[in-house]
Length: 99
Image (cartoon, rainbow, N blue to C red; front, side, top):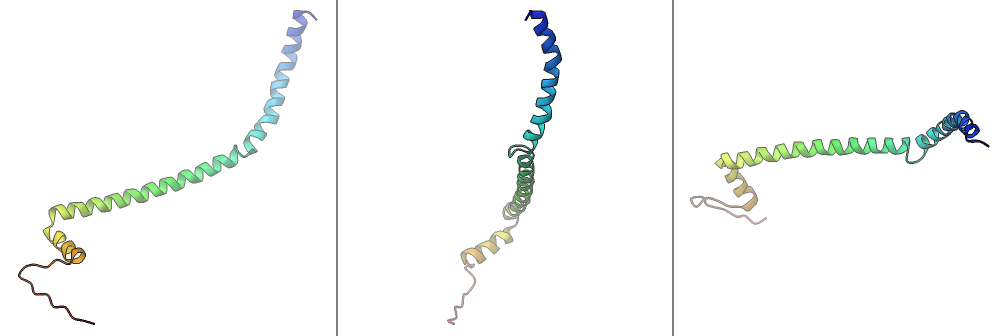
């Protein structure tokens, strides 16, 4: 075969071969475990992570509010000292009753 005949053969068969590979390969790639099912799984995972981030953002804002109250409100500090640490003022009298 001459170079010219080889070139003509390739010009005719190459587009058909590429088309066949595309027609067969595309569905295989789409429906393979790494194709469309994996895409759906990643989309669900992304939605879960975004929801978790939103919840963490709400928690952060709540904690920032608590920090601001502790910095600016002496009664909030006193309430925590009384409730969590069991502290009382020096002028107060504590009665303990047995159950």
